[in-house]
Length: 127
Image (tube, rainbow, N blue to C red; front, side):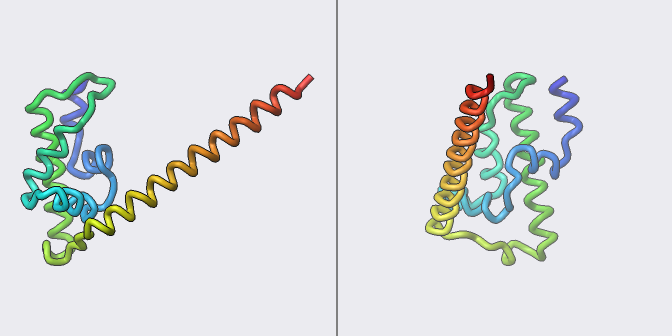
């Protein structure tokens, strides 16, 4: 089952499933960590993949996924007219993005928790 799923993946599907954010953000995050080679970025990224409901990935499967992600990134770079057109974020910009995303997530958790409390209280009041 997992092998069929892997064979059905395209670079686009792989990118959307495992990352889904902008290419510039991906490259900037790894650049900030000292990576300058796209292939090595992709290899490192796949090492953090968790298992799926289909089980753990074998190393050759992780290598395959890294190749698909690298292909997506390289296709994107060609599409925008070359690497010099990439917007590379500074560490400060990346930190600000992370903080904003974390705050949005915390707000979502708070609002969900509040909604659950209201629903629970309404359920208690019903005769």
